[in-house]
Amino acid sequence: MCKGDGITMTYDNREGPDEVGRALPTYEAELGTRISLVIDLYDLKADAARVADVTPEMLNRYVRGQHKIPFTNAARLASAKGVSLDWLWSGEGPMLLRDRVHDSPPAAVESFDLALMGNLVSGLMAFLQRESLDLDPEYIGRAVTLLYMLMERERRDTTPEDRPDLWVEGHPVDIANDKILAETVRLALGRLRR
Image (tube, rainbow, N blue to C red; front, side, top):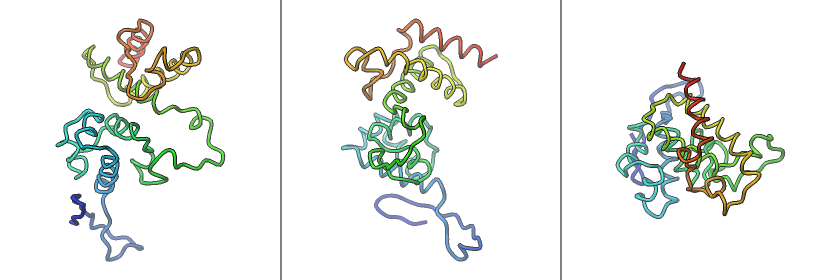
């Protein structure tokens, strides 16, 4: 166990041919360290907790590796500060999206909008809670993907002033009050649950 800067890191005692005699940090400790670095981007830990939709105590548990952080909480925490989810999950690449260097990025990455995705995830989670639906992450992922494709089309015909939920970070898409989206989600979820 190693303590530093208020972060406790545990180490796995596995040894391999290249690591003989060295302790390797566990994934949870490494992820906890990266989560801590993201939290440091916020003015207050309470702000980070609010964005992640958890208590400050739960954030501490994520940092210490005592609880696994759900993807939606990690995505909220990272996207609000422009942090790469690739970096957060794997430690690879630059921490901040703005620091990425793309020689020739794939089209899907080039067109992906993190603010829209965050707003859709937040809106979908609120809708599922309102409808008292508890779904596996796989089904939530499918629903978000479907909604993203629909909202990308709608966004072409609108502006940030008309629909901030499609453009501006921190504006969840109000699925419950959009008949077409609500019905699409209900149909998709009904089909997925059969």
